[in-house]
Image (cartoon, rainbow, N blue to C red; front, side, top):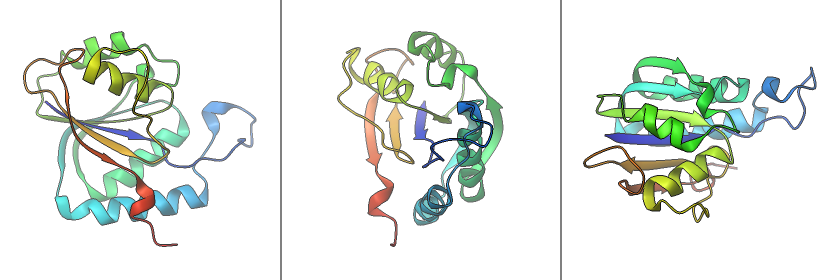
Length: 161
C-alpha cells in the first residue's frame, strides 16, 4: 500500500466560536497549500481513498488537495483527530485492501504515526510541519515498522512569496 500523509495547512489561532474543532484555514494557509498542491499536480497522483479528520481545518485542506489530485472516495475518521490512537488507526488501515490512500490530520498524531510505521519507536524523529506531506510505502503488510519513507515534502520549498 502507498500512503500519503498530509498535515493540515496553516489555520487560524482561534475560531470565531472559540472551539478548536471550528478553526478554519487562514488565507495564508489556503494560499500556501494551494500553491504546494499545484506544484505537485504534475505527478498525476491517484488515490483510492482519502481519510480525513473531522476538524474543519483538515476538511478544508482535503478540499484543496482534491482540486489537484484524483480521489475515488473520501471519508472522515475520528481516529485522525489530534488525540487519535496510532495503534488503533494502524489496525484499521491494515483492513483496507487498496493500492493508495491519502490521510489528512493533525499533530501530534501524524508525526507519532509516521515514526511508529517506520521504526516502532515512540520518540518522534520526523515532525510534519503544517501543510507538509510524507509518502510511505508498505511493501508487505501494513503494520508497525514495516513502512519505507519515499518522500518528505515541506511546502516552504514550493511557495512563491
